[in-house]
Structures are given as structure tokens and as C-alpha cells.
Image (cartoon, rainbow, N blue to C red; front, side, top):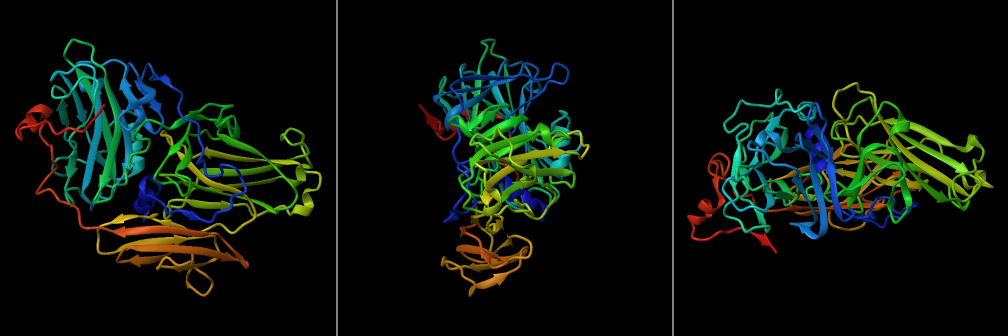
Length: 510
């Protein structure tokens, strides 16, 4: 179940949140500022040569950059480049660990643009495979590979592409590297993708990368986090949107952006590096209180590497002025800590035990919701925490599905329906709205789907009914399976490869 949960959080599309009434503006981070136009440099540690950009680890002594301009990228406005290409691939690596399903075929593809058209300018894809996210991340964040699997054919092969067949400064999708279904051993639960470049042309080539894609089976869902380098980074004091609302109080390596793991709104917020105290990673929002609603905060949180010592704090403080500056009676405040430790679900639902009735909030004009995270695992690698769907009004949280809505090509798909502890979950499989007369499940129970199905569910707890969660699971034909081994295995020129067919079949964006 652990890898199913990881795949759901990292990669799979959730269905729409039907009819949600959220108490907070931008509670699901659906509204975010765009990255500013220009170039952002990412330095690496002078000793280790290791650095970071949103969702990616940079292993390059001279660092790298994200360039952003109108339609600059292959898929949007941003693209990544290494600052200085060396003669060898080992000096420039951009990497990420991704949960995968080894029973399905695996396709890896990316787009490039080069300032120098030459077969002496090359990119390399180096896929490594690991038994767990923890083993992958401890290697990745130390530029090591001692934990990788090497007990199968094509383990840790290099897939090089010469760029002599491209047009100068034009985007091209390079051919996909594909592993057949069943080509990977069952223990290959995680892919470490490594993108590299080198320049032996003597012309100081710049190679841009964008639209990095890892897909499985017939699903179009991209497993890569921040594949187009457009996630918004936040520094302490920054607002996430239009100078108001959510504001980062503290944190290092903090970002938000589009994600197929989003429960609603299409975006998630995440802390990538946590300290051992809650004060070091904190996201706040100040909201007006009108005394008409009972308040009981709720938020969804998850991690690709849950742990009993990985924690979230929900802190709700009250104020007598409209700007969250003059404290009200501190006895009204709500604070509760939660462990992000569930390995069976993609998103955990955290709701405080305490609530504040409208009558108790006389004289209160505003409240500050503060979401904080800490990591006391003692591990040498960073664990990211993702947030979505924060609400203030007392309400029964809607159910969640693991995996969320997606395409599937197998004869059946098992999904887990989760909800608040002690609730009853009512569901339908025909697209109709559920009621308390519908079929029922307990949180954590499963449904088996054998055809395209629209699943809708609601939770009932203590007589209170949640909003309806909806997800679509689409059964598609089985994917094409290569005859053996990965496609594109041998290194070679793109021009030569496609020249065999009389034309250069590369997709270009001009």
C-alpha cells in the first residue's frame, strides 16, 4: 500500500471537489503569482557541489538557472539550464526521485533547445532504480548511488543524445526511453531520473531543458514534480498571490505550483526542507471573523516519506482588530499537533479537536491560521511536506480516494476510500449524487472498479454531512509493450536515428 499512496500523492489526478464551500479565500492554493520574468540563479555548495531548485536536486559545481520569459519554454514560460557545460556529463546533473509502479511500462522523455548545433553537444538520461524513496533520497541528496538496484538487465544504463540534428535555439522533444511492462523487478519502487549535458564543441553551448515527462502504462499523467520549472518560490514575508492572503512567515526551500496530486484547485503548497522546530516552517493567513460561524480548522497534508516524527501544527489565534495584530483572549486560541505518518493514504486529513462557537467570539474581528511543519526524524536527508484544502468553518471533511481519479489499463483497479475517523462514507458508482440511502463504507475500505466509473462519495459524522468528492476512473486499452528492454537503448545521433526513416520527426515549438 505504501507505494500506491506515494504514487497517488506524487502523480495522479484527483477528481473535482463538487460544490465545495471553502471558508478561506484561496484555501486550495488555486491562485498563485507567476514566476517573475528574468533569470534566477541556483548556486551549489562549494564543498559538495549540491544545490536545489523547486522539487529538483542540482548536482553541478557551477550551478544552474531557471530562465523565465514570455513563451520561452517548450511548455510555458520557463526552462532550466546549467551555467557552464564541461567536457564530461558528471559535472552537470539535475535529478529527482519518483515513486513508480514496476509492473507497468515506463516512458521517460524531455525537451531541449541548444545554442550550438553539433554532435559534440550532448544530453544524457541516466535512470537509476531504488527500493524505497528513503534510499533514493539519501543517495540523491549526497550525490551518491550506493543504494541503487543493479540486479536486472539495463539497470542504470546511460541514454545519450547528440544534438547535431536539431535547429539552433528551437525546442525539440527528444525520443522517449521506454521500459516494457515487466522489465523492472518488483523491488524497483522508485525511479531516480538524472538529466545531464556536456559540451565538447569549444563554442560554449547553452542547453535548455523543459517539459520533463515520466509516464506509465497508457496514462498521460506526468509523474514528475515541477516538470516545466514554473513553480513559484517563496521567501519569508512573501505573499503567494497578489500581495494578500497566504504569507510565508518562515521557511527555507518553499514553493507552490501546479500538481497532478492536487485535491482541488490544481495546485499544492510545499515545504521542502524542515527544521526540528515548528517556528522555522510557517505559512499564515489572516481572515476576518464576523461571529456567524463555528470555527474548527482543517487541512490536508501529505509526504512522500511519512514518519512518526514528521509533524504538522495547526495554530488558530484570535485578534480584536481586523489586521491580526491586537491579541484577543489567548484562551480562545486553538493549537494542535499531528503526525504525518500514514503510509496507506496520499493525503491525511487533519482537523482540530477543539472548535470555537460563534457566541464565544464576541469582540473578535480577525483570526490568523498558521500551518507549520517540523522534522525530528534525525535523518540526513530532507522530507517534503505538501499542503492542500485548508478550511476554517466547522465542517465534516469530504472523503478522499487513493489513488485519485486516473486512467487505468488493467482489468480492475482497487481504490481506497478514506474519511474522518468514526464517519460513515456513502458512495455511488453511476455518477449520481450520494445520499444516506446509498451504499456505505467505513474509512479505509476499498472499491474494485472493472470499467470506466465516476465515483462520488460523502462523509457523515455526528449527523453532519460533508461536501461530495467526485473522481473519474477511465479504463483504456492496454498500452503498447516494446518487445524487450528499453527503447532508445544505444547512444547515438538524433539525426542518424531519424535519418533512417528519411526525415527528422522531432516536435518543434517556434
